[in-house]
Length: 124
Image (cartoon, rainbow, N blue to C red):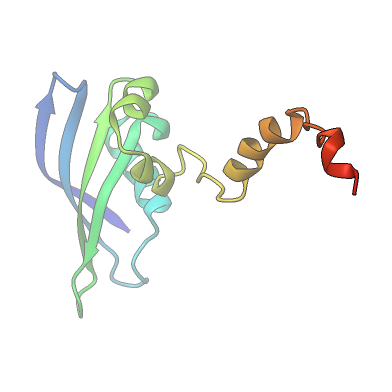
């Protein structure tokens, strides 16, 4: 797998560098996002936790994948700026569990005291 940078642009407002890249993978399938992050971090000499692969697109019938990458000045800047689903795709954030949120919402309701029925309703 060979990574080649096609374009580089500095974005000081968001504390990052934006890259367009191309990966040649003639003898293998399309590389995983994690493998590309690893190779890209070595190429730009930056820690892997600061590299975000925004998108990758493999053209049909070719062994070339093009994409966009972002390299932040710090991991905190990456986590505060990037969208949650992109952080999940890059392995920097856990995917939220669907079952965990309702369980937390039911706990306060279970702790509420139950009101007793009036004494008149029990008599016939």
